[in-house]
Image (tube, rainbow, N blue to C red; front, side, top):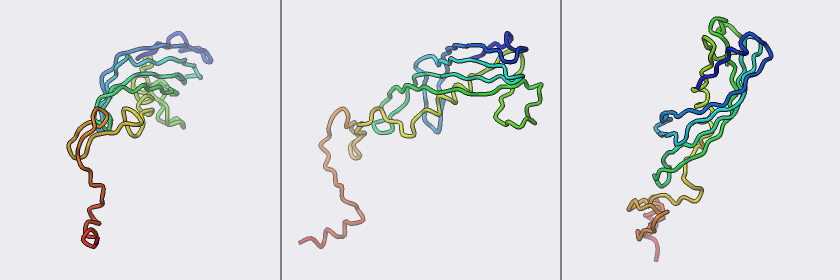
Length: 168
């Protein structure tokens, strides 16, 4: 996902709109695989801020992953925001007081990794297919969203099993 900034490269204050779409490979985060079902989209504008190029926009994609409760695949729509500042590598940005700058060379900004980061930030901590997902039976492994099981559940705490001896 690249933006050609040749038109605004030497024009401080000028803006350039972009609307990009690209099919990306799956990414893995902490052992969880996210497969992009739709092309990843990014739209916004680049502003030349006197040798700093500010990119602002929105990102969007649909990913497929596995539910933490029932272990079934499901799709998750993600929408993130993008706000990054790029500077030319030749401008020695390592000594710049703003350490969040991203270096680039030539006349194009490659925003792909920042687009992916903006989407991954939007992933919920607990990935479930629906808020009322019942998960799997702990004894037989049946998907309780699909069918009930006939397992007898013993909800008692095993640490308190000794107390059962004292019941009359």
